[in-house]
Image 1 (spheres, rainbow, N blue to C red):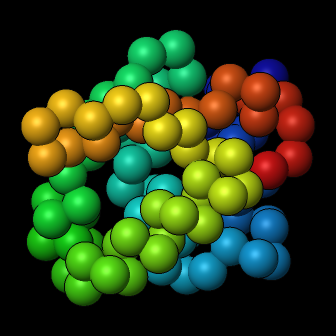
Image 2 (image 1 turned 45 degrees about the vertical axis):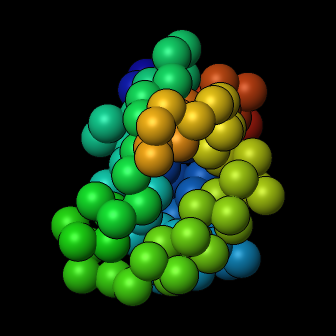
Length: 93
């Protein structure tokens, strides 16, 4: 049986609407995010870690939110808290 992260990772990687930038952001975040509780994310940290421009990180996050892969929870200082959508654990993203 596949682990929940494996199921959602497969769904994201096979979705043709997911850009390479969004896939890179998802891959980085999927190691940190959980289905059950939100985790703070700084876009500047993502941009630095991935060698991407902040506007590209922002666009990738918005796409992942539009696809309901990431769920935005709240703001914590300059960070936005996200979690993986538990509704996608066994379904296609």
